[in-house]
Amino acid sequence: MLDLTGKNALVTGIANNRSIAWGIAQQLHKAGANLGITYLPDDKGKMEKKVASLVEPLNPSLFLPCNVQDDEQVQSTFGTIGDKWGKIDILIHCLAFAQKDDLSGGFSQTSRPGFQTALEVSTYSLAQLAGAAKPLMSSGGSILTLSYLGSVRAIPNYNVMGVAKAGLEASVRYLAAELGPENIRVNAISAGPIRTLASSAVGGILDMIHHVEEVAPLRRTVTQLEVGNTAAFLCSDLASGITGQVLYVDAGYEIMGM
Ligand code: 0WE
Image (cartoon, rainbow, N blue to C red; front, side, top):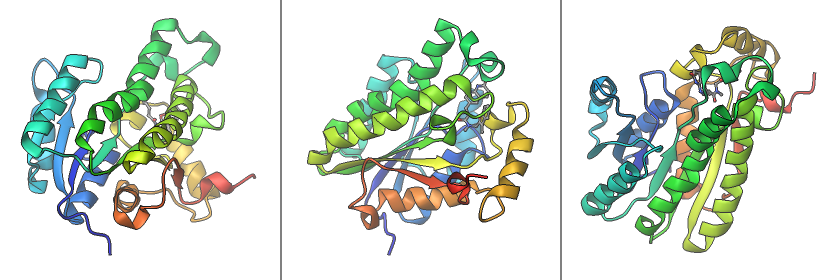
C-alpha cells in the first residue's frame, strides 16, 4: 500500500491550481505525508497570498519563500526546515524558467544571459536543493524532479529549455550515483504536455496537446493528478529499488515513431 505517513515532504514550484506541483502536493497529502510548501516571493506578496490560500486545505506545517536565484534564501529555507522538522524525507523539485523570447525562433539565437538564466533556474537548482537537503536526509530520502521530452528530442520552440532538461536528466543520474550510498533516491518524471501557467504562455501549446491526443497510445494527455500519483509512488517505499531514472508519464506518447 502506498503510505507516506510520518514522512516530511517539501514541495517547490506551486504557482496556481494548474501547477503540476499542486497535483503532486495533493497526492502526497492524500498518502499521508506532512507537507512543506515553498513559493516564489514577489514584491507585492501576491504569490504568497495566492499559494497560501490554495494549499490551506492540505495543512502544510511549513510555508516558506524560496527563490533559488538567491543562495541566502535557500540557506534560510533549509535552516528553518532543520529547526522545525529535523529531517526531510521527500524533496519535490518543480522549477523551470526561460525568458519568453528564448522559447520561440531559432535556438542558435539564444543569448548568453538567456542561456544562463534557463540553466540556473531549471537545472542548477536541482543540485543546489539536493545539496541543501542532503544533511537533513540522514536516514535516507527521495528526490523527484520534472522533465519533458524536449530533453531528448528536438521539440519546436522548446529550445534552451530542452538543453536545460537534458542537463537536468543528467543531474538526476549524477545525484543518484552520489546520494545512493546514503539511501537517497533521485528520479525524474517526464510528463506529457499539460495546460499550466508556464505552458499556456507558449504559442501553439493547444496544437501540441491535440497532437498528443491523436498519437499517444492512450489517445489523451495526462493530468496533474496522474503525475502526482506517480510522484507519490516514486517517493514511497514501493519504489525503494528505483533511482536515477526518468519515468515517462505521458499516455505513452514517447514510444511512438509515427
Ligand atoms: O517545461 C515546460 C515549461 C517551460 C517554461 C515555459 C515558460 C513560458 C513563460 C519555462 N519558462 C517559461 N517562461 C515564460 O516566460 N514545459 C514542458 C511546457 C512547455 O513549454 C514549451 C513547450 C511545452 C510543452 C515551450 C515551447 C514549446 C513547447
